[in-house]
Length: 472
Image 1 (cartoon, rainbow, N blue to C red):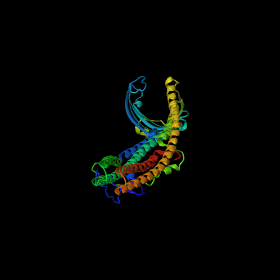
Image 2: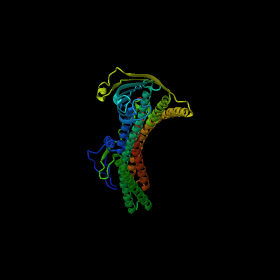
Image 3: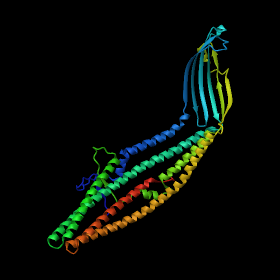
Image 4: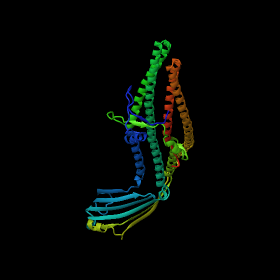
């Protein structure tokens, strides 16, 4: 078949002639652009990708500063009651705490207490106020030694995000591959309908010629029945082609996410020029099927999860230090004005050690995480080899398909010339109807095979989107 651009309408009613195409018809790149803009499945995948990124950022929620504020009223008649039989306390507190990526926890606090004593042993102690300003620092020296645990968590979240992002990207690529495949299937359906109509027209001519030859005594009734059978077959093929075109139109509309009231756009297609995906990827190294590469990312995340489980079960040794001011006065206002004075501070330095005993449950949790990571690693190694072999097989099949398309083009051309020659001989009375019917059938089948082979080549190029270079 000659190389030419096919200007095709997207919607063709059964039995009608192909519509003449306008210059504004949508080509493949424009069609894919509209799919990206309007297809809600792609929009949903994009939102999932944004959600994955947000979850990664949310991992640092534990490092966010926390504000605390409180107010309380208490009545105390407990023993011993050396100051008074009963005292009332109003307490105000305010604090800010934050953990840093270095594993350091810092907190700032302020607190005031107003005391009222009933029947105090010393009259001057009927009321008084106290207040403190304090700072406390805690540093992990083992489990989260200077932020080791925090960095491990971040590494795990990054690995999970890469896995989720690649999974979503594969889903988006799959939608685009399906959309492009639907495009080429539609192109084949339109061109196939055109071929079927041309085949039917030729079959009717053969039947008409056979009727004339029968009337003139040149042919017999068996030739006429053969010609009529060919016409009936061509009518059935045309009806099938019309139905197939309607089905492919539905796929196109679904990919463009068109409402029922929206018209289907016209498209134009080029079955000759190769799509760039395959050739571009062939120039790169370490190409692998994305589905296989996902298992490598999963193994990385499982390994980090295992390390995080081990880290969480480590003993912990924390260094704690605090400094607090102390203010005291009968009047609350006076106390507050001196709350920052450092003449009577309270300081504290200490260490705190925690360790979980090696119970069966603890050992089982460690074993489960390690074995899960090892299983994922083994699967990843196997799938990586399979993914690389899949690309090599994809290239091999692509080259074979290209050669087959060239061969089918020659076959279609030869069959077309043969059918034309038989028709010329039939018109001159130099051949029988059976030969014309056979040649016509072979030519029609060759044209369809060539058309589908070209479409298959374009779809194979589109499927290269499901592969990726790991160097990128």
